[in-house]
Image 1 (cartoon, protein in one colour):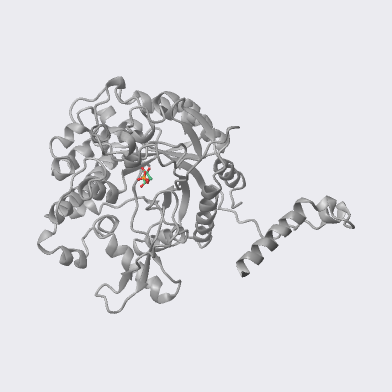
Image 2 (cartoon, rainbow, N blue to C red; image 1 turned 45 degrees about the vertical axis):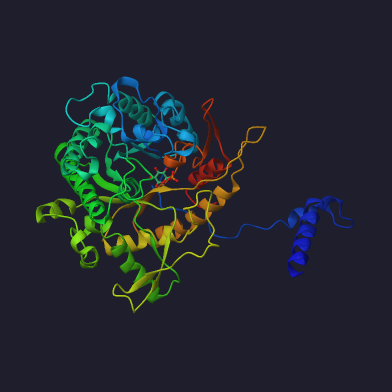
Length: 488
Ligand code: BG6
């Protein structure tokens, strides 16, 4: 009953505003004067804050058979029946390989100051190792030159999951050799590109390619290992990162900055009180013991090793030193948060809060709405790992976008999501936490891995039949944020 009354009242008020000019006895001028003034202070970001977008090679490039590119595990996986939605593949994707100029034009229209892209390893080394493909760099050279002409600063990821298939055939990340081979490739790319690229990220989201690729099998290469096997793969993945850091430092031009982009479990205090905040800090270390934490601390936590017992990975002290190589920055991919509460009865001093079934999420089932994560992830990681430079290397969401007949996409839910997350971003930046830039995922709708083309994350709508790009309403929103360097 109450609900009904308040809704009806709301409707009446709306009606009053819309039909204001027709209200008897109310002069039009009075209504104009009654418009509320915007009184809140403009919530600006520091000067020089970078506004970007991110993509990844297999998700946008297409052209999988062109210019000597070798097959990757995602070619194999997506062409295996039943692995992706509707059997979708990245064969064409956004055809960015041929349309990169148009896409950089979209970036310029938005006012982006930076762009994060990834290199397809098998374009440079079709077999992953051995002879370099002379045409391999041509595309990236062309793309980077166009980007720099547009005054957009490139951030380069060396591994966004498209391992050359030839290396998978030799064991993939189950083999220690892959870590070493990755470092060789990273050194070659850094040597070639560091005259134009200053920021390199070794890998993107260790947790995703290890756990989805080797535990649940929902991503390439689609394996389901036991606990011991998985822990060893995770170890080789962080070792690959560490060896790549050393190789980049050895081969890149002086002044090159090295980091990685990770999606740590974004431990978020369920209530912002000292005991829950302390619990979230503990959780950030322990829940990420095998990925970000071992990279920043150069050792596995005691609790992690104890929990694994005989299933703990084999490692040497020399490897741990490599894994813990000092970094210049951390990239955080933050989509959702994991709520944590204090728990004195637990040996680790915290408990993860199970999400009630009513928790709101975006169009992807996993993407629970937790804007506070964009405050707490940088805040906690900066504190516990003593970071001086952080980027939000991915943030964004899927939406059930519809292209209207007259050619618009009114993705109001994406704007709602972005506005809430950016409010938390502003909060953390205002406190002096060293977040230097933000990359929205994604510039374009693209091949969303196992979801194929079903889930759209772009702020630009892509008609995959015609490759026509249509900026969505959220693109207009982001453009305004960039123009003001502040919240809208
Ligand atoms: C991030 C990845 O985890 O999430 C992106 O780095 C990916 O590559 C994005 O596109 C969305 O994930 P998904 O699995 O829903 O496509």
